[in-house]
Length: 294
Image (tube, rainbow, N blue to C red; front, side):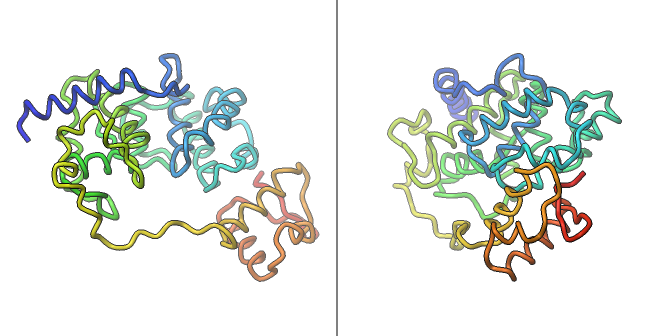
């Protein structure tokens, strides 16, 4: 792709994003870096519509890392509600504690310091750098990978896991200009979320359809390893969620017998209780009781 075509691709995404961007609170100019960090953790594997009310509740209750750090990790798990993957709540609490203790209560701007926080990987550090501080960064999530796989590589879907070639391609497509880079990162993610979707892309209204290699090739189907959707009904994930929901509803320790009412399969229930304890999402209390972590 020539630099002229690449610049055109960037301009079309940025122009589309300026008109079509969803009005999300963590994109507001007055949103704190902490608000951005919380949103990025919550949005991992969870759709925006489910994150919005919980994010607002968290920021109202814990507007700064120090506010969350002053609470028990169990309160973070309780407030996490039904967002799923509740270990993210523990990671956020741990990150808030480190920020409060080691960074004077301010989310660090330095990418190395960001990556050193508990539960913060390459993607989240890059996203906070870009969206909280406007710093140059290459932000690559599932949506970005899919857009670039189609537009640049002519593939229906990206590889099963992120590889160096994808990172290099993503980096090459980030505009050199600081302000355009921040908008590009948000815009290409938005494009993947609402236009270039995995199962039902809306290609006829895509702003980069004239530059899409996948479209030009006639939309060749995905030919990689099978991609299985995650099951839910009857799984350990569902059982763990049901057990945690019981604990969230009560401040005091709950007897094991009451947990039995939440999940009938005794063998699976015991296995899931043990895994929740191992993950520090549950604590054993005296006399056969359980509680959220203190």
